[in-house]
Image (cartoon, rainbow over all chains, first blue to last red; front, side, top):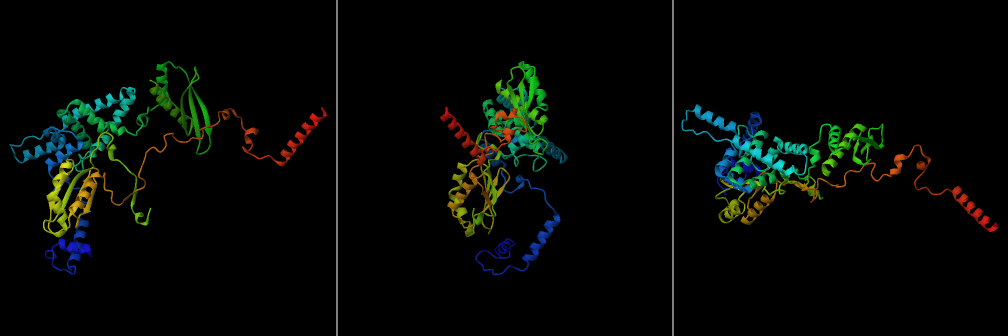
Amino acid sequence: MQSLRVISRLLGAQPLAGAQCRAVKRWVSPTMRVIVLRKKALGPQPEQRRSQFLEWNEEVELRCFSKRLGEEFEGKALREAFVQPEWANVQEFQARQAGDTAFEPVAHNRELAENGAQIISQTIRGAYAPSYPSDVVEGIHSHLTSQEMLAHVGKHLGIKDLIKSLEYPPEERSLADTFRALVGALALSSPPERVQRFVEDFLLCQMVGKDVYDIWAPAQPYEYMLRLLQAKGVEQVEPRLCNQSASNTILANFQVGLYDAKSKTCLGLGWGENIKTAKETAALDAIQRLHASD
Amino acid sequence: MSNSHLFLKPAFITTPGQNGVGRYVCQLQRVVLKFCMSHGSSRGVREFIETRLLEFVKESPEVAVYLKPRRHKSPIIKAEYLNGETQWVNARQFTDDEVLKWLNLLKSQSSNRSGVRLRKLMHTDFPSIQGPWTPYLFRDPQLNLARFPSEELSRPLHGTKTATQQLFEIFEKQKAAQNANSS
């Protein structure tokens, strides 16, 4: 009842506040019904761009954005970082079609993104290279610089509504590019240490709570381990079946230990539902121990 | 949990995108205050705008605040979060104090928390730092060399003595005592 009254007020059925209205006008219900039917006939509508809303001020949004990150951007660089090349091209094309000679091409973020990608790679490699071998560092690098990860980080900084791209909501590719461009834009207006700090605070912290060896694993762990061991001077490895339980059942469980054939020391222990898996898990364990001892 | 919480969506405490590990990012990105310039129900919101809004904006420069006057409708606070969620608060008949309190709540939230019940006030992704249990944990290493079937291992671990065994023991004791006496 209350909501119907509100609706009737919305539609102007009632004069201004203060006047008594004790009934819902008889036209309200059929009108609402028709509106609902028409909406249904139109089908699902595309999501509206936030920047097309009445309450949108790009100046304010950009200022709030830089305050949110706690960084100062040089005015133009930040604006440029949000412009996708395709959008800039279409803008230029439309101006040419309309015969606008005074149109100045819009600067887009391709160069900034390339520059930013370089800085991101350097920072990640610089952070992990001292404590991990290069294979692992590359694994972490590709995990952190994947399109999905960069888009995730960017989205949680609120770049989704600010991006100027042809599609809306912006694709992962646009989000990732914009995040890279942001780093590039920051490099133009801040000293390198600050840019590095930015990447550490927003991108490297995504590794918190994750195990490096969950992210990186060689395709053939046993062979990989043998190669590592050969470099260390261990020639022969002796895999032993340490334990087994419930074999020949669906819950079969094997434990394999890898031992140095000469010194009889344990290199790694692993479990698995069959001996082959257990051996590979043991090899992964051995790789971790070898990396830790380096 | 009481009956009034039965239909709330259960949830754990979460942090979007590791917020606060590197630096803290306020998750409220935008607030729209919709109000009427003349109606009584918007009085508190109007007062808030006249007296305290500038202070709020200065304190929280990372939140974009928009004002949207519209005629003869209830005032609404519309909050937009970084994760894309939107929350509407009906600010009808609110005082300016209440508006400020709600804005501060929205600012300190990470998403729309209405209709959500926290299952616990703490949460961890790693409940055990010791790792999973395996059948081989604390297993006697002697068992590695055992051959089955083994009579030794087939016996019950903590069996009580049978009456026959007890009689045998008494008999053995008596025999030992007799031997000691005779010698």
